[in-house]
Image (tube, rainbow, N blue to C red):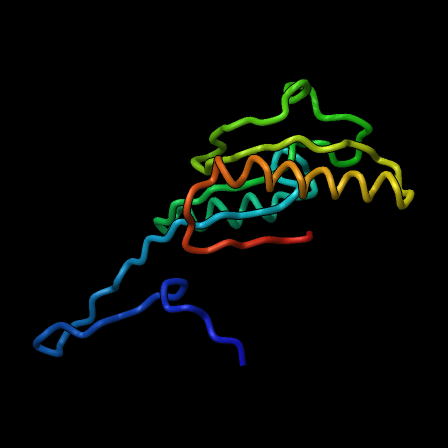
Amino acid sequence: MVSCPLPLIEAYKKRSNGSKRVKLQYDMKILGLCQNYAPEEQNFYHHGLTTGLLAKGHDVTMLTAFPHYGKDSIYDGYRGKVFQRAVLDGVKVIRTWVYATSKKNLLPRLINFGSFCASSLAFGMFAVGRKDVITRSTL
């Protein structure tokens, strides 16, 4: 059985007279870690997750790579940078450099994944700050 930490679920507490229930709100600092994030079309799942958590009152930051999925280069408007801070629909987005390739061979893919791991570690250590929860995905 998998248990969910108390701050991630809705909790209720009886009032002192025992008659009514009051909803408790838990605000957490959440970090999402994923190589692909909006505006990349195939990854709107992550954007939905982060904006949903934000709507629940949490402080949400996404650490991700510059958009590049399916192309041999970084998307227009993001090129020529190694680090960027932005806000997308209320979510704080931190983007780091990645070796962009659409090749499916082993070496280019290893360099792609490895470059994101290295750049997100290097920049993430300084840019993210302390968080209560880290969520990551391989989608």
